[in-house]
Every structure is written in structure tokens, then in C-alpha cells.
Amino acid sequence: MLYGKSVVLGVSGGIACYKACEIVSRLKKLGADVDVIMTKHACEFVAPLTFQTLAKSAVATDEFAPVKEYDIKHISLAKKADIFVIAPATANIIAKIANGIADDMLSTTCLATSAPKLICPAMNAGMYENEATERNIRVLEERGVVFCQPTEGLLACGDVGKGRMAEPCDVVDKIVNILAPKQDLDGKTVLVTAGGTEENLDAVRVITNRSSGKMGAALASACIDRGARVIFVHGNIKAEIPKGVCKSVAVRTTDEMYAACVREFAESDIAILSAAPADYRPKTARNSKIKGDEITVEFVKNPDIAAALGKVKEHRRLVIFAAETDNLISNAKQKLTKKNADIVVANDVTKEGAGFDVDTNIAVIIDSLGNETASGKVGKRELADMIVDRVLSL
Image (cartoon, rainbow, N blue to C red; front, side, top):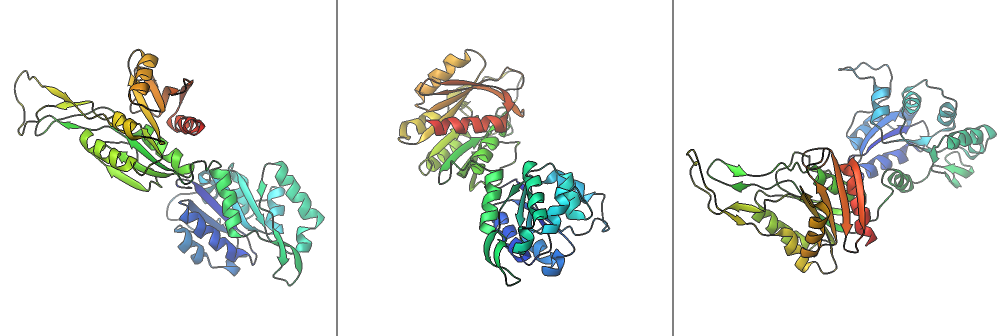
């Protein structure tokens, strides 16, 4: 759910520091990268080693600590953060942030970052209800800072009132809602294919294509971020296999990809076939290296993965791709009907910024209801979310 997301967690000095340990544990289980910054007073409640063990990363405590390599830590963490969380947040750290004071690692990094901020107050009820604290919170809310409000109950000092830090599960839910607000694929299994296949020509040569797998990786990441269980079937890819994939199946030939897709589709709710399997293979693959000035190769048709899934899809959704060089829309619509798919993503691979081995794409999304949406030139991750949105709209 949070794979590839970076959470910087600031821990200030209060008895609720122990709750921050559970926050780190929960975030790691969701796949997030977590870096912890502790104030000097926080270190009196929980040892940095505890957070280091849970987060599996070094804990920052001192702006002037000697380093083995050049790294201005408060700047590097400020840039790294997808979200900056302070839990627990004392009245003191809230006042510092509201007034732009930067006199330790935590307040300095918070001032330097442009990431969304989530603050979880924890203090005595009298301090929380003090006019100064209320004003500081209002100032920060006006700047767009999000607060996870404290609850009422028995406080560490023995008083009863509002000031208990929110429970770790509620804090983590807030973080998820900020970083991955759409969980509309929760409980769904999505089969995503990516990359190109290869077919043997002789003992040393193969026939393949220029597919990098970047579109498939973007689709898998988008589905994971939206709560799906993703099965990733891939041929040759240059893109990294996305973190959070529940099952990765590596194949080489189109026959192998066909078998894997038919097998995995049985357990899937949605299949998005963005791979570029070879349509043809040599009828005979030589056992030795072919030599000669001229050669003639006879090809035969490979099995059609999209058509095979279309025949058995029933209630499931099927998304296919049409990489074309001419007659883009008409060819894509014919493919949509012929394969019994729900959506075809058509792209003209001759256009600059579209097609294979680039980070952008230019596509027209066509569904079985006749709706057409031109994406324009967009990043592949943005196009991936557009495709998922269309699938869920059917």
C-alpha cells in the first residue's frame, strides 16, 4: 500500500514516544521507507536504537554529528520525505514550527521540507487548551498542516482531559489517506503483464522487440497504491519490478506468457495486458548458428493471449493495448471487439514521446461502451491511473 513512499517521522519529547514505535512498525508492514528524527528530550524516553531497529535505518538526533560521507542530513531528509509526521508533537515543537524556529534537527528539517505535514499533539490538557497552543495550531492549519487530534482520557500526569496522542492505528490511517487516498482496488486481484517476449531463431539468436516494461510497471504500481493484490507476469524488462507485487512470474517466450496468464487469470478480477508478446515465432529454431549471405525464415502465429482471456473472462475486466503505426482508432476498435475486451489503450508508436522505452506515452483509451479519452502526452504513471479510473467506471 505504501511501497516506494518515504515517511520522515519526527519524535519529540513526551511519554507518548512509546506510541511512535508502533507507528514505525505499522508503516514498515505497509511497505513504507521510514526515517526517524528524535529530539534530545525524546531520547530520554525511548532509545534511538529502538527506532533504528524498527525502521531499519539510522536515526537522526544531532545536526552536528560527524558523518562518514557528505550529507547535509536535514536537507536530504527534507527532500526525501513524501510526508513529514511529528508524533508525538509537544506544545514546544508545535510552537517552534508555527513561528519558524529551527534550532534542532527536527525543527530544522520540518522548516526545510515542502512535503505534506501531519502533526499529532500530545500534552497535558491545560497546555493543549492554552491560548498560545490553540493559536499556534490555527496558524499551522491555515498553512495546510494536517492535525491528528488528541483524545480525551487519563493523562500521564494523572489529570483527565484532552491531550492523549491519537492511537497509532489512527495516525497510520491518516498517513495512508494522505499518501494513497484512493483504495478503490482494495480486495481486488489484478493481473498485469509487462515487457517483451523472445523467440529462438537459432542457437545464439532470438527475435524480440523494444518493449521496456515501463508501462506495465507503472500500472502495477498504480494498482498496488490503490490497494490491489498484483500478479506481475513479465518478459524482458528494463523497469524494476514494483515493490509490493504479491507474485512475480518471469517468462521468456510468448508460449510461456500465454500459459502464465491463463493460469493466473483464473484468480484475478482484472487483467491489464500491457506486455508486447511476439505475434510470430520461427517455425523451426535451428540448433546451430545460421550462416550464409541470405537466409529465409518461415514464421508461424503465436497463441493470442488477449483473445484467450476474452473468451473466458465472464464477470472479470480485460484491458488490452494496441500499439499501432497507422489507422490507430479503427485498428484499436477492431481489436477491442475481436478480443472481447472491456478497454483498449491505443497508442501510435511512431509519435515522439509515445511507445517503447520512454517515460511518457500518448494514448487514446477506448471502452466497450464507445467512450474515447485522449490522454495527451503524459507520464506513464499518470496514464496508468487514468486507465484504472476507466476500468472502475465500467
